[in-house]
Length: 271
Image (tube, rainbow, N blue to C red):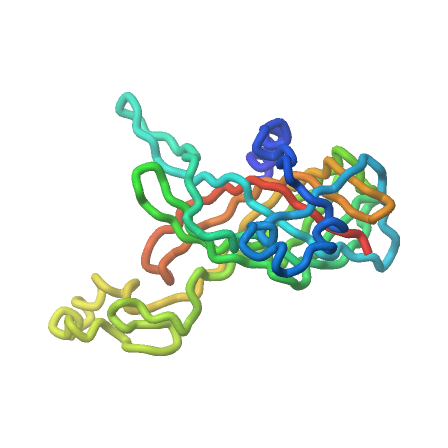
């Protein structure tokens, strides 16, 4: 995953989808807007732009705050058949979620290990339920997140070209209180589908529906690679691009999750 992320990150930096939009706003410009000026425009789902190519060397005790992570493109790993052979490839997908999929207000501690910056995520709006649709119409839900991220950098200063990456936790898309169409849940609801008592009356009958009846809260691991391309030392701001891979929804343990590739931009302040 680490090597795949770095290769994808190198390509992402060169893609036009990460170019700053014509109406991109800086953090200070966004702060000047009123609620009514932002309402309905989609600005609340976008990360601020950073202007500058300076260098920031974080000091002991400083943190990354107001981190914003905005996805721009999604792809789902599928098995593609060709010439009697199948291979796994990422297929470009269309986001079906309204403009609520950006992470914001994420913050964490900064430290140095071996002369390299290490960022440990602590809190913020660090997850967003998102659904993408494959070209064939299949929809894939997943929890876009960076919970408990520990990202290790390749240097001691934030500057254009600085890279950092690491693993994060991906909680279950559904929580224990969610009930499926048969009224079954993880911590509440029925133990089995009430409409099928005959099929589930013994051990053999329950085997076929074991995963459907026994809900689990699956926590998986994802990975993100980030590259800084803009630094504003006066405002203590950094910005850049990211590539993240993670698993999608398991339907509380009843199906095999698909792998999701997400590319986009990020923003953060060094405080």
